[in-house]
Length: 99
Image (tube, rainbow, N blue to C red; front, side, top):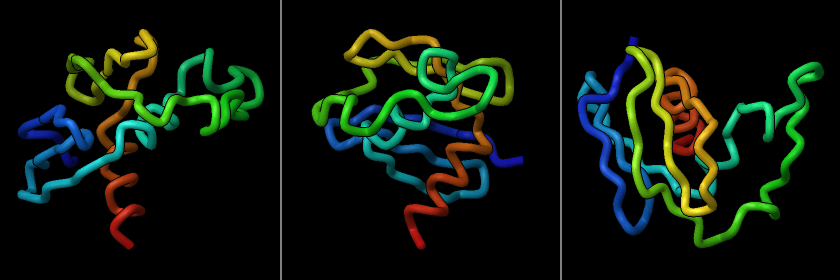
């Protein structure tokens, strides 16, 4: 399982060094849109209920904390704090962005 060795919140986005030596860079807005909480995704259908256009283009993560050994949670400038981002999801997002 890939896990972050280091997470940096920089002006241009989130930068993660994975335990296999790969660095991934993520735009803040892209990560914020991936939130899977009940405010962002319908709990019953799994359908996303927010659109990318609803997320401010200048959104930033201002802090984060690890959730167990499987995920990270960000505090966003829009004060959204309920999203849990599994490491697997973030790593797949990195691989998708780099294709």
